[in-house]
Structure formats: structure tokens, C-alpha cells
Length: 497
Image 1 (cartoon, helix red, strand yellow):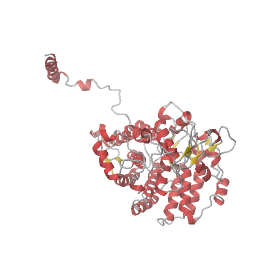
Image 2: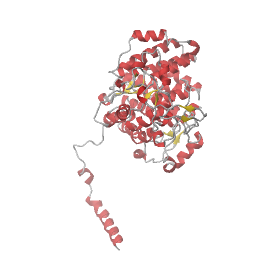
Image 3: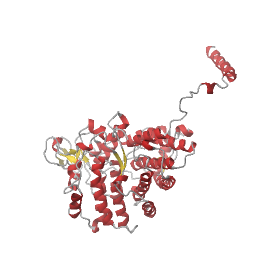
Image 4: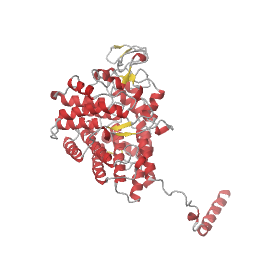
């Protein structure tokens, strides 16, 4: 009876209110409040969300990627990538953070620009940022929600399909081409653009440079398309100097996304040490002392072998691996790089020059591979002072001496040299370093063989999907696994096959 009475009372109120609340919505609108948050404010936040916070930069960028790629080495057991341990929440941290923040943010921005009839510079800039967000997620996991992602508040899509990575790449390239074309001579973003300050010339250069990156990522999977898009990107106009570097400018507070996520990791975790693999490649290179400094118990810069622990163990091949009781004798990242107010780098001019060198080596362009290689090396050295102001500047004379000595170009192994230098240039851009190694196989890395390895002592080829996807978006998840392969660390994605 009580429930029935409540029902009748509710219905009576609804019918009565049909007349009562005519014009009621207008009465409850604050005339001094904005009906919609401006795109500029949303844009700044979405860029910062893309740069990321301590959570995903610690777990995915550092704990997995930086040690898988042997930039860093550690003794700590929770640094899973050093020994190929399985920690699902670490592997999925980029996904877990990006879909509710950067993905949702950029889809909302693009929808708002459409609603406002903005098809100019602001839309082009948003589309370029959108490509970057998705390209990093798909390069981490493979097939992912893309065409239907981030649309929950827009069209009610709560269980987006996973698009095949090949389709994602083709669409991202199309998006970049169209985005660059619609960017004009100016934008209204201004300081809301915490990368380029609203400079549309730099956005166009980044759009074409990212097009080149994505094109070269496809060289194993679709060489013909890779060539076509690489030539188009270069012809369109890529970065031409370190002034074009795509990087997010951070501040030391207030907390959260205003700070550099890597810097926040360094603040609370001192486990990262220079890998001896990286140290060997930096021998005779003036970047060694700029990127690293001696450990607390040492006076020289010495790298730590990957795959070690504090005690001896027997590896999967039956060999005894000596324990390391004191990590403090090994080199650590230089203090100048560990700040929370340093920029987070997305793509550099140096990387572009190495990719242009590769295109020339492949015979796709008429450019001189040696010239592009040397431009890349010089840019990679000179950019460090620009990115990390507290670091020691490398002089032009030091760069020239390196190119005349340890780094002299040898056409017989030109591609290997270019990709080894690319790996150096992407230190602290660990998502890109890991992806490019999987594509090229350079530098040559020796896998560790810890007995608790999830991959039988092989370097992981991808990060697995979040565990909840199988239950909350089961149909889409199952279709992706059936198409791409088992949801394991060693399943190769489309461009890595």
C-alpha cells in the first residue's frame, strides 16, 4: 500500500508539474555562468593529461618500457620490466589513465568544435593531438577502442569496439593529412596551448613529423603504404630545427598534472640506474655525462647490468647470475633531468632527421642519408640544454668530434647507426623508444633470463589488455583477441609482424 501511494503521489506531481514548470528551466539558468567550458581550457588540460602523471609514467613508461629497452636497469623486484615479470596493473596503466582522461577530453573537444562550427586551426590542432593520444595507446596494446572510443557522453557508446590496428593507422594518417591542411596562419589557443603557444607553423610541422613517424612504423607490415606516406610527410614539411620539438611545458606545482610525471617518479623512487647496455653505446659520446651522473657511492659513471637482483640466482639457462648488493655504485639519471618542472617530450627534430635518413637509405627519397644522420646527431646533442636548462650544454665542437670519431657514419651499416642514435635520442621518451625497437630490432639487446620471467626470457612485444575488459566489454575484447592473437605479452601487433 505504501509503495502504491508513493507511485500515485509521484504521478500526480508529474502531471501537475507539466503546467507549473513552464519556463522553469529558464528561471534556473545562471545568466552569469558559462553555458560551456571554453575549448582553450579543455585543450590545456587534455595536453597535460596526455603527458601524464606519476601513476602511468612510473608503471608503464619507466618500470616496463625503460628497462625493456635497456635505458635503465634496476635491482628492485617491483620494477617488472627488468626481468619480464607480470604485473597486470602496471602494464595497463597507460590505458587505465588515458581512456577516462585524454581520450574522453579530446573527443569532447572535437565534438564541441563541431558544434561551434569551427573547422579551422583549432580543429586541426585538436585532430593532431587526438592522433598522438591514440597512436601511443595502440603502439602499447595493438587493437584498441578507437572509432567509438570516448563517446559515452556524446552518443551513449559504452562498449566501444576494438578497431584493427591496421585500420587505426590508415585513419590516423588520413587525420593528420586533413588536420594539417585545415590549420591556418593563426589560432585562438594562445597560452592554452602548453606545447607551442598557439604557433600554427609548429603544429603543422608536428603533424607532418608524426605522419613520418607513423609511416615508418609500418615498414614491416606494409612497405608500399609506408613509402607513400613517408614521402607525403616529408614533402608536406616536417620539423626543421630544435625549435619545433613537440614537448609539454610543466611547472613545479601545484601538484598533479601540472608537474612532469617522470619528475614525480624521480622524487619518490631512486631505483633507476643507467643500464650498462646504454652506457656501452654512450662510450665516447658527450651525452654520457649530461644524461647521467655517478651513483652516490662512486666517482665514475658505470652502468648496471640488466636482470640482476640483490642476490645470486640461477637463470633459465642454468647459469648463475651474480647478485648486486649495492645499487649506489651505479650511475643514476642526472639531477638536471629529474625535475618536476622540465618538459615532457613527445617528438623531436632529431628523431625526424633519423627517419629521413632511413627513408633515404631505403631509396624512397633523394635526400643524403649521411647528412640527415649527422643533422640528427647534432640536434640530439644540442636539444638537451633546451629541454633541460640546468644541464651542461654540449658544444658544436664536441658534436663534430663525435661525428669524426666514435659516431662517424658508415654507409655499410647506416640504418643500424641511425636507429641506435634514435634510441639514444628517445631517452625519457620510453613509449617511442620501445616501439621503434620492436619495429627495427635496433639496438641489439640481450634478453635477461630470470626464472620468474613471464615470457620465458624474451623481451615483451606488447602490453596486455586490462583484465576487466573481458567482462565489461566482452564481445569487443573477444573479437580483438580472435583477430590479433592471444592476449599475452608476446603476441605481436600488426606493424610488428
